[in-house]
Length: 242
Image (cartoon, rainbow, N blue to C red; front, side, top):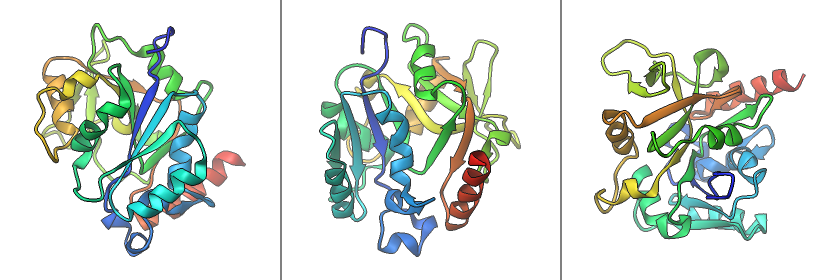
């Protein structure tokens, strides 16, 4: 961690197959599908590049050679690829493989299929300021439905008055959506299985111990999981930039 307590490394989860975005993803990895004239991954990386991290790790599986070419074209020595082309490791397994690159301090994790437009203060910095390792193991950025576009689910979490998160469970809906960004402690992975496993396992473990916390983002959040969501996102960006 830096002197200010901000994470200095980040992991971008970009190794999915993108099946819901076919046929585009038959020839292009989902993170490189263009949204408003730029690869989706460029939108995702924007807030990270604005805080001068020492390392940003991007994992890749599907069409990994294109992902490698994208990283090389960035010509940014802080951005590196974690190659998972041989075995798909899911979100948790992908992070575990990359831990040697991420270091021993808490780090940011971002999904490569969503991004946000900041409000008054950058949300990456807001997360770092809110981070309190004494009372939390994971801090997640959250969105509400009225902040969101491209999202079709029923919500993920409820939140207690002190900021702890509980899963929606059997309830028909929940007010807060995981916005695809958070801060995690690396020691959470010490007793995880080898190979593929989902990051949600660690979320649930932290929630059971009241150490999963949330922060509602300031701004607008866009989930780009389908072809239709690309059009919706581009329309939202036009509205925001008007």
